[in-house]
Figure (tube, rainbow, N blue to C red):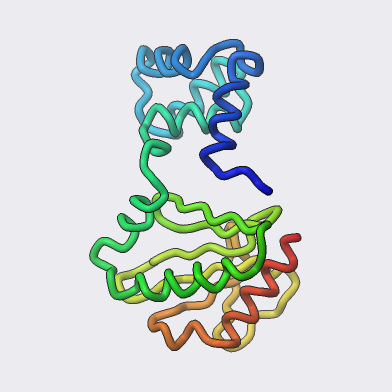
Amino acid sequence: MAKSPEELAQTMIDNMPDKTGKALGDWQTIVAASGAVKHGEIMKLLKGEHGVSHGFANLIAQKCIGNLDVSDEDLVTNQYQGKEGLKPIHDAIVSHVKGFGTELEIAPKKTSVSLRRKKQFALIQPSTKTRIDLGLNLKGVEPQGRLEAMTGMCTHKIRLTSLDEFDAETKDWLKQAFERAG
């Protein structure tokens, strides 16, 4: 079974002294002394001046700004502040994908929830107070109907404004994205 994001982060923290030459606390001291406070500034410092690889630099930066100290539940709750009417759509999507099998990973972020198998196959993002954008990775599939083209982490999106719109067609596209991520 795949490790949780927390377990993966802890493994990286445990391996950090061997891989980067310093423990997390030492890196946090270096970052604090530098005056860098934004994620991009910290990344530039660690990668550019200290030669830290991207993955470790990102973890150190996230720890320095406190993003990894918030629970998954709190991250999702915060996403729906002022958008509470969309939460049932989110919950229906998550409930549905949990039936896809044990390879599924649900990874809440600050503004979205990433759904992954071996790679990300979908993204749940409350984009406005009245709409969730369900991003899907369906490379090579022509946009049609409600399935719109998109650039970025996902190739397509479906706009959802009500629970009724999370219908059989949307569930089919979501399942196809999951299967392609295997």
